[in-house]
Structure formats: structure tokens, C-alpha cells
Length: 451
Image (cartoon, rainbow, N blue to C red; front, side, top):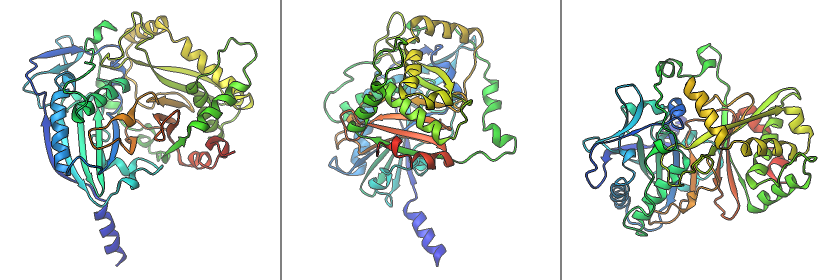
């Protein structure tokens, strides 16, 4: 009997694919080729970047009407963002690029039904493994964009709403470009505009024009978890969303700024630097690091205004670089928070146009395809940004009630920051950690700002 009940429960939460189609730009574009540049290429062995937005049924008609409206808007937005309807390709020298042609399939749109799942069930704070069936391209490498769509969207009918799962090829665009596309698409669907208000700036080679030929064989042979390959069980990971209210964020910032480090030239610490050191310290504590253990802090920083000449916000592609810094856990935890904040601030501020250029030249001389877990020892790696207006993505039936990342590109210490649902300066922090350390972190009242 118990088995029958469990079967029914499984059926109720199952996601059933009901259809698959492709959407192309609403007008003929012709043949277009756009070289991938040094800022794009390191991410070929990352996985597709997954985002999940869920909406309550507040108007907008039936599910089928919403799907049709989204496809119509997609046709319009792809007239400018047509690269997302293309594929990865190579020129005669083996240099990778984005190819678009009118006879290509375009963007994949999957329709699905999960009428046993409510929106409220998805807005909880726990992990994203339950989201897997709501987002396409789980475990798909960006390199597979050579024969797969560069964007796949799954629209799932829930009991009381809609889930929109998106998988973007990360070798083609970063977070800034992702949310530029999403907001442009939403504005067309909700009637704010009939065309793209701020067209994407598509010429990547203005930011960097070195032609790099890559040997892609290591990507194919090294895919997979090293520990698992050596016969060791991979440590169990957990994900959790921590919500910091505006008051908590302000309190963290004022605490970090209350004990400035002794005359090391630091400026007042920003909200990001303050929250970053708060996370770094408490994650290191939860991991029980020894004082002599090194810990790395990494942030994937937007370089549009750092490069020379600066690029517009509408630059379409990857214009990010990982900024690394490290210190001993003892120094990080025994000093006031301003010590770690100063370490982070110095690393970010020194990453100017000269540093970016030097990093690019070094990479071009010896190209290395990063794997998503190459962020460093005992690391805390921060991606996404609370500056992205994720809760403004309204397709005509209200703002999303939740925005999350999928299960791709997660490893021990990966952090995604989002604009908080409660608005203002609130910030949502999505963290992936080993299960044992996560248990400690979620009981840490100082981290949670409950003290």
C-alpha cells in the first residue's frame, strides 16, 4: 500500500514534456559570423548557465495563451539577439565563433506540465535538485553548442502558475547579457515596447581581437568528477538560499566598516565587499579550517567599464574575468572582518585595464579551458549580482515570485547573489557546500544575522 501511495506522490510531482518547437527571428537576418574572443573561450568547459523564474497565475490567460505570447515576443527579441538562435562554429583556422543562418533551428522551446507542483513549493530555501526537471540541459557543456541550440527554454504549467527554465550557453554570454536579453523579451511581451529598446552591441572583437586556436580534446577527455573517476565517492553537496533583509545588509556593512584596518589605504567598504567577507568568514568557519589552511575568494567581475576603451553596458558576450585572492584561514577569522574586506577590495581595485590585458595575454600564450570547479582551494566563488533586476522580468502577468539558479556549475563554495525578493537593498544568497559544513552554516546565528 505504501508503495502505491509513494507512486501516486511521485506521479503528482512528475514533470511531463508535452511538446518541443523552435523559434527563429521574425525576419530574415542572413548569414552572420561572430568570432568568440578571449573573454568567452575559457568557459567552454563550464556547463550551460541555468536560470529558473516562477510566476503565479495572475492574469495573462491560459497556459497555452502565455506560451504563444512568449513565442511571439521571442521572435521579435531574436531579431536583435539573433546570436542566441545560432550555433557555435569554427572557421578554417579552427577559431571558434557564433554562426547564425536563417536555415538554423533557432531557440528551443520545450512545453511541459507538472500540475502536482505549486509555486509555493518552489519558493522554499532549499536546494535546486528538485528544479532539475524544470530546466533544460542539465550537465550539458557549453562546447556542445557546436550541435545544440545556444538557448533552450522550458515552460512548465504548474498547479497555480508557470515555471520558466532557461539554459544559456555561457561561452556566448555572461550574466549582464543574459538579463539584458530577458528584460528586453519581457518588455516586448508586456507591451512596454514593440521592439528592443537597447539593442545588444554585437561586435565582440572591439573588446579583444586576438585569434586563439584551441585544442578542445582535453575538454572532452577530462569531463567528469576526478574523485568519482578515482573510485572515491564524491562528497555530498547541499544548496540553500539565505535571505538577507535590507536591515541585515546595512548592519553587516556598518559592522565591517566599524573597525577599519590600520592605515593600509582601504576606502570605506562597499555593500558587496562587506557581504562577501561576511560569507567568506562564516563559510570558512563552517568548514572547520585550520589556521594555516589557505582559503581562496573568487569573484567573476564585470569588466565592461574596466577595459580600455570601456565597453557599453549593452556589450553582448562575456566581458567578465575571475578575480582571485587568498589568505590563511587564521588571519581571516582572527582579525576583524575589515581585514578580509580589505583583501577583497585590493584585489578588485587592482584589476584594472592593465591587469585585464596582462591576464588576457598570458591566457592567449597558453590557453587553458577552465573547468567550473577550478576556482581554488577552500574557495568561496561569487557569481551573478544583486544589480541584475531579476524581479522586474514581467511578461505581462506579474513579476516573478522566485528566481533561482539551476544545478549546473555548482561546486563546494559556489555562491550566487540575487536582488532580494523583498526589494530595496535586500540580497538573496544561494550557496552550495558540503552537507556537513552547510549544516553548521545554517545554525550559525551570527551568519544569519539573528544575533
